[in-house]
Image (cartoon, rainbow over all chains, first blue to last red; front, side, top):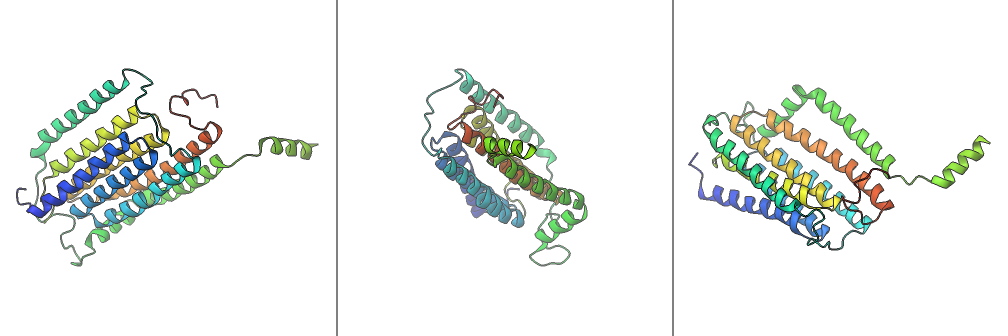
Length: 194
Length: 103
């Protein structure tokens, strides 16, 4: 595992700085629009890491779906509701909450880090069995082809269920955000009843 | 050249990202920012999935990330829909203001 080239280290650390800097921006910036831009930075960093780990299809989907659709949705809602003014972060509604949350975060990092370091020996690398080694077909599409074979083979039922999930989500959102004509509707129903 | 950088580095990065997201979710009071923090934590989980999928040469991890992305998209759509309908009625509401479910 020590055969990483200098360039790979540069890619890893610059993407890591993008990810962590964007994440810190999300939780510290006062303006929600700036926080959304920090989220974009984080998502692009994760996409870079996906490319570095040879998950090319997921990197493309990450950029298109997350940075493209989800963040635009966030920005739409921010602009639509007009909440794009700065928030005063110095007010602490619950006094001891921030120190406790910081302790929780550090403890989480400590626990996960200890587990990762301890389990490092279990992660035996088996050379030549990676995902994007030139597979059966030997062309450059082997990652997306393996993903498609797995998705439409082993997980085809779950894949079909996601379509149900998306339909329910879209219909539910339309129902939730619809402006119900409360008074007009009730009077109409009453008049129709009468 | 698969994962020349050790998988542990990716896992540690994902752990840091998850902790930042969890901290922000606990600390911030703006519901939109809290949603963004949930996205950060989901991305940390995705990073872990892809790192271990690459490490173990198992494509199932990448399929799991695919499903996580679909569910995250649906979750954001529904969550922002709820948020829009709440904030339309009570502009500028924070998470503390929404503590009671009286409507």
